[in-house]
Length: 264
Image (cartoon, rainbow, N blue to C red; front, side):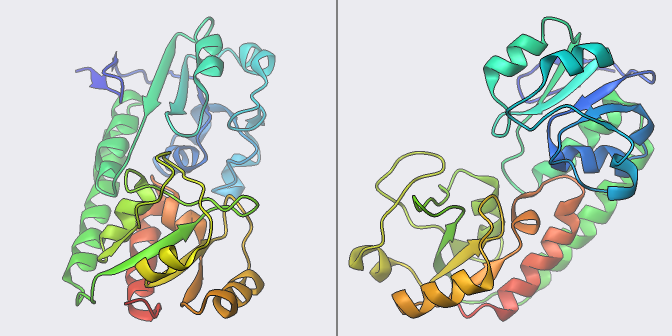
């Protein structure tokens, strides 16, 4: 049976696929599904699981991809993501990679379809179903936790300029699982820029500083909390934004955050 990606393209199972992944979180998922041996290329940001990816060729970053390196690897399949990879690059790679698998998970439960898509195309369906069962159990555990008071929380991914996330993102939907919503900002972009103002501070209950893509630290969090007079927490960006395998730990992390962060 065919399997359908985020753009509606259908793929037949291919047990002999040679895979290049331009998505760090999906590289980790493919390894956890037992497919590391079929990964012939990955980005320098594909760092998990360290022991398995070390032997896979690096082909640049998620955006600054070395096209010639990928061509020489002769992959049959390229795995990309709508948010993380640039269309002109993917279009160029499509000239010599037969199958482009496009992903776009935007909510935690989208991980189920993602795992089944990877398991289906690359003939690891049993492993994918085992992973999905573990995800369902972890998701149910999160849903069973006592719910706190809803809060409006500003999630920061960058400074100079300051940048946040819109409600139409995976991170925002992760936060929604514990009753936290993101404020609407003046910038309509998916990852909007903003300026600190009294009006903004009046609308939020707290701030989360992510450890990626900007490397916020506890020093940043302490300084900002002193400056704005609102609770500011440093959060693990991988746990909040990586789908695929890391979403299991991400759900556990989210539950712990809901219990410990002084929001609301």
